[in-house]
Image (tube, rainbow, N blue to C red; front, top):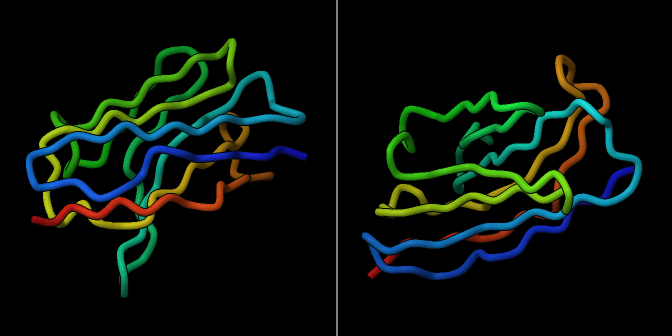
Length: 118
């Protein structure tokens, strides 16, 4: 079993920055993908960014150039540095961990709220 604990959400003004963290513990796969997804009210959950074992990075077009995903493998932690935030970035952000190449099994964090508003 894997546990994911997120932190770092909050309220920020447009143009501001936030850094999300997600620490994984338990039986973690050696080759894995850690990533961030978000869900706004009334919308489906969507990809924000993923970081596969090694160096493979993937970003949603809407966050390219503004968000940066990174990971510390020694700490089993993934980060999401969010800059130049916009009101449309407001959502609950979820951390995800899955084996490389498959979604089975897939683990989710409890979610952290990010609100961008003046």
